Image: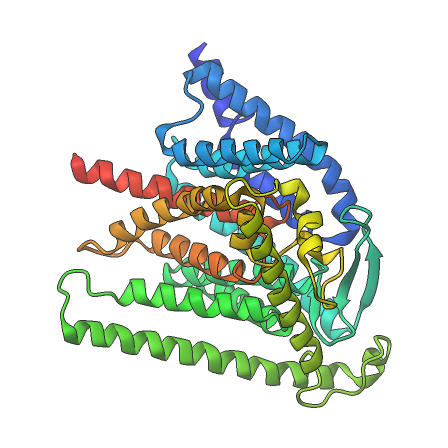
Length: 452
């Protein structure tokens, strides 16, 4: 019996690899030609995850450890708010997604060799990222522009390759999704460079990811890059053994220098972009209705950028009005679009945009009220603070933990202007909660070792 259970836990009910399969499916979901098929496949994966959780309950009688208390409290509150907002299929599905993200994905590290699994995860993501980024850059520089009506997300048109405004949409059919994936690949590739794992390949991989990120013209992605760089450099340079004014000054200098280097590198990559378009040739780009390449032409039009910024500000204001009217329980996740649209007074926002407030914290407050927002923040802040306490102790820095903390802070910063780390089928919400789980269980493991 024990041998059978051990075999099942290593194969059919291996939480870690189920989580990784779920992540790969979430990346494939962001590719418009695959979105419909992956949407149907996701239902199979959800059933697999449910079976894994049931098996865990039968085997241990404790499918949820005490580390999941905050996540379960948030899920219960989220479900209550959705119930008060009206019982619908959408409401039920969002509750399932919250449970999977904050409990199952966070818990895939439980009982695992975390260091070895982290290496396997980074290897998988960087190899997958290399393939996706190469394909995206090829589509972009060849001037491919193809529109798909995906039939999954409100029949929204999605662009494959090069957008008419000059932004790289790439293989993932959305400049933000492509930029966020490039951020993830860049961060993990740099981690593998620092730890001397496939250094030459990973340097090339990081450069490709940076090129993709810059060409998306996604300001949120660039902000995430600066936050990730600042967090990683600070945690690496922080004087753990002896804190002094001189040591802190050196840390501050390293931080400023790193941000300056990243800023200069992004500027240089923009010039490389223009030169590459020249090399590919004017004839190819005319297929995408683009003029011959000249410096600056591939940046988004300033009027379009201002319009995008104004739409976000209007959505936040409308979301704030909704929260003011429903401060305790919000309106339920399934009612965000109608509630925000009702409070909208701007011509920059149409009904389709009202479903996403483009700020995860506003989004959670609208859906679950102030109580739900505080529980959501606690689910992120508690493991993050535990990881930071571990990292700031005297001794050699844990590079895996630094990489995970930097990416979590990066994605949290990006979601100040997006809402993609909760109740979402795209890869960002999947990998975000996987990384939060790594912080939670790694910090707990360090505490246990220190106590012993």
